[in-house]
Amino acid sequence: MVENFDHWLGNQPILKILRGKNSKSGPKLNLTVQFEKTVFSTHSLNDDDDEADVEVQSFLEAAAVVAPITSSSLRNKGKKKHLLSTVVLPCCLCARISSSSSHASFSSFNVVDYGAHGNSQIDDSKAFLKAWKSVCDASENAATLVIPKGKTFMLQPISFQGPCKPTKINIKLEGTVIAPKKLDGWKWSSDDNEKDAWITFSNIRGLVINGGGKFDGQGASWWGCKKCNRPTALRFHGCGNLDLNSLNHINSPRSHISINQCNHSKISNLRISAPKESPNTDGIDISASSNILITGSTITTGDDCIAINGGSSFINVSSIHCGPGHGISIGSLGKNGAYETAQEIRVQNCNFSRTTNGARIKTWKGGSGYAKNILFDNIIMDAVDIPVIIDQQYKTDDIKVKKVKDDKAVKVSDVTFVKVRGTSTSEDPVQLNCDAIGCTNINLEGIDITSTNGEKTRASCKNVQGICSSCTPNVPCLSSQNNLTINKFL
Image 1 (tube, rainbow, N blue to C red):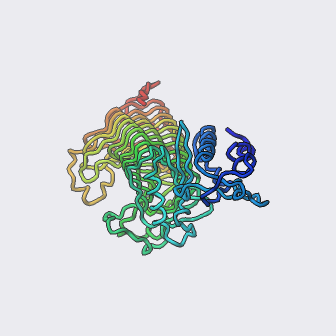
Image 2 (image 1 turned 30 degrees about the vertical axis):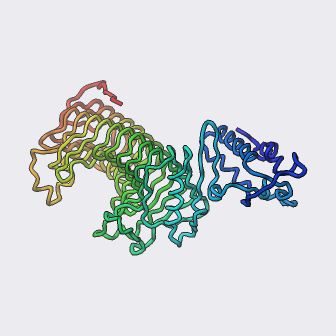
Image 3 (image 1 turned 90 degrees about the vertical axis):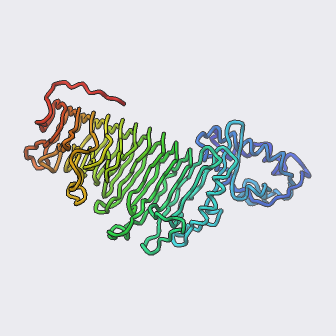
């Protein structure tokens, strides 16, 4: 990497030509776009700094061939603001900086260059869509959409559609993106019949969203409207190899992030928050996806911190701080008699603080399918209501659910809870409530949960088969065994 960029740039042959050091008369300059120092800093948008330096150098060398130059027109007349006083670039570069080398090629597009105001009042949706079209149609291998720091952009419900030409698209969110504040301020497009998401990303492979900025769903006006179809804030559908990292997300009207059919994706270093009283404000919902990693994030909401729903497999969750909220859940599965599956799921090294539930599996009565090969390992509980729970009769107080026959249920099997420790506000911190079909091969090892008020704790269970080793409280319906060998399948 070039440590002193100014010094390096000043010694490039092209810059000497531009400044008139290598030519008394110099060739002629035809274009009129000022090249500011900040333009060159776009080399830092590339993940590989060394490669970025090569790309900038390649651009400068190419400029020596392409751009006719006149030394008199390039002199800055004593002003040091610009590295290059007046440089002519092709018109296609007026709204972007494009650089290429034999190794990589990328383009950068700033929403402000497309008319976005960023004053939190004016709707910037059209400007964002114009910028997105340039990103999606870019001929380079990678393209970046820049949402700059220091500005707040208000967006109406909007959809960013793929597939796109670049194999990698980076949305660099450095500023803040907000939804309309009032309920009647939301304006839905005529073709959005479902009206169930604020921002949608569809069929975009290799999408990366990062930058340390913020999404604010401004959901307070929605939370009190029980009859409203409250929208999810961010919905990702068909976005394989998705990467969300270093983002802040607050106050969604409903779920903050929905991941559907997005295989081989990573979610890391997020901060998601909403008041604990806000209804259904899940942090991250996953469905119909496999090979997902969620790690290193803090989630405080009014519902599940993470919900792993039907069609999910090979899901790894680690180093999550959850709370307040409803815990990390597998499900719910089988609602309205649906066939749903969830398997090969690992939740490890997570902390729960003042949540209603901790490690939870929930299925609806009358559904079908299965939840299997699930591991909760090294979990710390702090004043959690029910730290360990399997509920195969989720919401049986619902009138419709009460009418469902008992001979049908989502099968729950091969579930292991290891090293779950901490405190509970309940006298029943372990609850294994299975339907008549039963839960099989449910294994607990190293469970140590005490009451916050010092009272003795107990476990409740029904229709469960499995083994308990070193469990406090003791789980009476499970067989006791010392030094249980846990099959860690992942």
